[in-house]
Image (cartoon, rainbow, N blue to C red; front, side, top):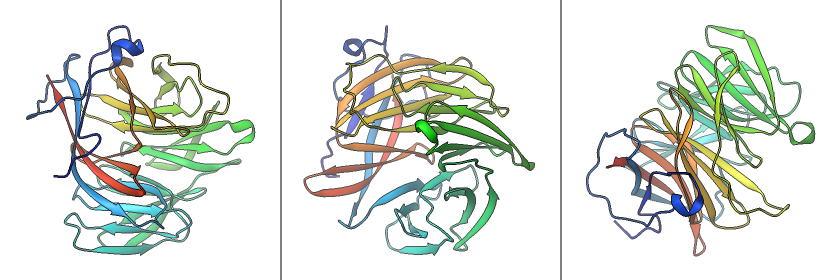
Length: 310
């Protein structure tokens, strides 16, 4: 396997969650453990990489349980599906661009501007699942647990956002909760979703199926940022009832990584700041994760494995 700038990253326990205490060195990892204790550290290792052509503009990525990689590109009405062995790539047409991809337990959901679709990669079909009754704005994220579908919305007046929720058994009965910024969503277990705001202090609210707030957490305070700071985020579901929250400063290679314990009570476990041009994607299949890296004039999709180290 070729060298990788983030070959292994350990997120070590954070005592008082001050930056100096949250940082750790890069270590080498051998083996893995299912230890879910607070002292376990998250280790990321590269499994494979897929070079992207210079013209590629990925808007959404999803790693499916069978190992295939689904990519949506900006402005393209459809998705490409790369087989797990890399031997073939095929195109599935869609009625509109689908920049939001969200793999569920047994299905792949996607979103256009205001509609949610189901993608059947086996049959090469995209079916319209439901329309979201948006008052304004566009869909920016999706999450679900098989019973409830949560939809994150952005592009509202004043930079505000919203979260919509609907029961899959009653698809016409939507609930709506205003948010002060667009949010990224990830399932948090126990019938809840985590919603991370795109504005500092990047608070993560935990919402149930009725959109009631059941708890919250946020990354530790960092250096004061300039008024022109721009951020993007990812929420990556882990096991042991945990989430990886990534905040990226788009003006630099700075990435702030935080691990939360989502249940039974949301709390911050550990945090770390790295300087790497990497963007984590909030998708997971088994103990796998997708990231996009840039550097030296090239861009790659990187498949990462992760484990808990004692």
